[in-house]
Amino acid sequence: MAIKVVQRRPLSLAERTYLPQILAGLKVTWDNLRRPPVTLQYPDERPTIPQGYRGVPTLVRDPHGREKCVSCQLCEFVCPPKAIRITPGEISETAENTHVEKAPKEFEINMLRCIYCGLCQEVCPEEAIWLQSQYSMTGTSRESMVNNKARLYELGGTLPDSHYKWDKKKAEAEKQAGGHH
Amino acid sequence: MEQILNNLVLSPAWYYTAARGLLVIVVLMSIAAYSVLLERKASAWIQGRIGPNRTSHPVVAWIPFLGTFLMKGGFIQPAADGLKFLFKEDALPGHVRKITYILAPCIALAPALIALVMLPFGELPNGKIITLCPGADVGVLFMFAISSLGVYGIALAGWSANSKYPFLGAVRGSAQLISYELAMGLSVLTVFLATATPQENNALSLVSMVKAQTGAWNVFMHPIAALIFLICIFAEANRHPFDMPESETDLVGGFHTEYGAFKFGLFFVAEYSHMVIGSSLFILMFLGGWHILPWVPTIGTGVVASLLGLAAFFIKLAAFLFFFVWVRWTVPRFRYDQVMRIGWRVLLPVAVANLIVYFLWYALKG
Image 1 (cartoon, each protein chain N blue to C red):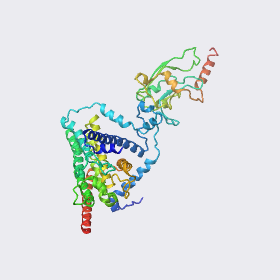
Image 2: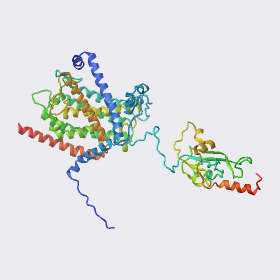
Image 3: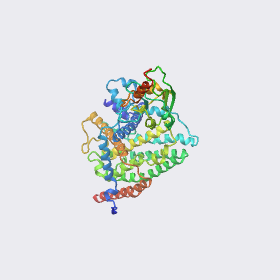
Image 4: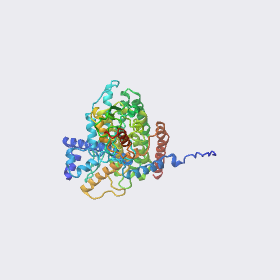
């Protein structure tokens, strides 16, 4: 591309006095002044959260009400600020979704450490942990900023599931056991 | 009504004098406080925001319609700000020069209050002038002399803070004041040439200046002088684009970096008081003082005319304060060398040339 040399024109007398420029600037600010404000009055008005927003990490259930997390602890390992603490637990023989792998006995996310990076969601093989639309976390103590399992499920709710992987596994396991269950 | 006004303005009894002084100080202080609110609101509007709209008081909020209006308009914000300044911990840094450090805010504010003495606000039906110091014939000189003393507050603050940013701010402030004071004085001289008659001995009084503007206002007769004076009062009040002593971006907070709480509040009020004084001077000398419209001497008669004139003065003052704010949020700060260049190489020569032209014109006219 050819180089275009722009002539630097000397300033005219009007420009050197600054005054027309200042008047033009005053006009700009005056026009701005007459525009309505764009402020969102935050606690009174809430922003609309777009789809795919990465807010507070939560745990979700599938539409049958089964908790999706199998406490594989991948999120705990991947978490850069080490905000997640999982205590794995077995599922008792008598529970409805036995034969499913495992479930967390306790699941804690420390929101004072969480950096909202979303790696836990990305790494989860069960799509059990989701960063959802909750964006405002407040508390009056350090303890209240640690989300326990119950709170995480309360925040997460239910997300749709298309393949019900563990329902199939369970059916298969029960068939192999000869309908014994 | 007329009798009360007369007494309040003219009576030499000590209680009337005290009431006068108190009234003027209260009015100036609330104008200064509310120009802070104006600053915050207008800057918010210019930037597409709303500005202070939350501060209220249970008693005020209880008033049905007015309460909401006062809250949304931020009218209680200045009181909240003042209280905050008053009750904050007033820390005394260990490295400052104590006496001057404490004295500086007072020295900054006092000239602004003293200069008020000479300000005429309006005219009574019997031709007497509403002012704290009636009959003083050196009005303008006194105003210039006293109001430029305010820079001592800035210089002392910068020096006593014993740290480099306040010191730089103080040095810049003093240099700027000296540079612009010259052009300011010269620009006003042309106006005096026009309005003062040699035989009279109150040639320098602001009152005779306003009276000379019964017809055309000076801003139409002396546009160049008015422009120079306007630029100079921006510089004298240390307002954008000439806020050299403060320059938050390059000097942290400038001369008041080391100040907090009520001492900072005093500097703040002093700055806005200087704005009020500068605006009043401009209005009295160029915008016809208490005349309502150019070429219209008075509207109404008697008390009505006096009150309308008083209102005209304060409306002009409010408009001018808004202009200060408007310019601040429009024009970025000049560099220090640009400030000096404008002052010495542009304003001063133009003021001198303007003076000579008017001088020759009057001389030839005879």
